[in-house]
Image (cartoon, rainbow, N blue to C red; front, side):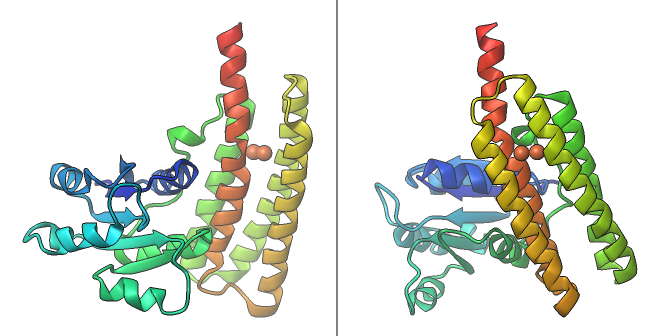
Length: 254
Ligand SMILES: [Fe+2]
Ligand SMILES: [Fe+2]
């Protein structure tokens, strides 16, 4: 059964990022943009987890947590704060208020995933609808990367580090081929942001290679899977959403 997560967040780009990351791990998401309807949505959807910003336009996340924790039924739902309150002492303050977890903003995707996984077991990574660009070749290549990532996670979970190293070599080759092929596709359809997208690919490769270089020194640490997922999903696949929007406007104009 899919896990349900209620996201309470007024900042749209953050909301979309949380939504994509959670949906890509098999969760169903429900959204509140101002916090006012949190209690109503929690009663309606009985979420497995609530992810909540603290600074909301009409009500404070602290007021909402008091309402939630004062309710005989809702008090059992774990609530993770995602907040720009990131000064020393803020974490203690937030946990003392009743939140079960705390992710400082701007979020680090690996930390975000590990904090969620503490309270909510998540499924393997999949390409949720919001991550499908609509270009068959690009989507097929993303699907190939998704498969490789999940195969890597299985090898990692079983402690097969020789298998992991082999799989990483395949992933490296596939990512580089994908970037080159995607850039050709983008050029072919006259994608306007091609230059900045190429730069994005470059910086993703730099991050990816730094991550892999680290494993040669420290091995595959406990955070490696989340870090690899973050680079492949957040920086790579999610970065293609602008291309998806471009394709949609092209179709609308045709
Ligand atoms: Fe891509
Ligand atoms: Fe891309």
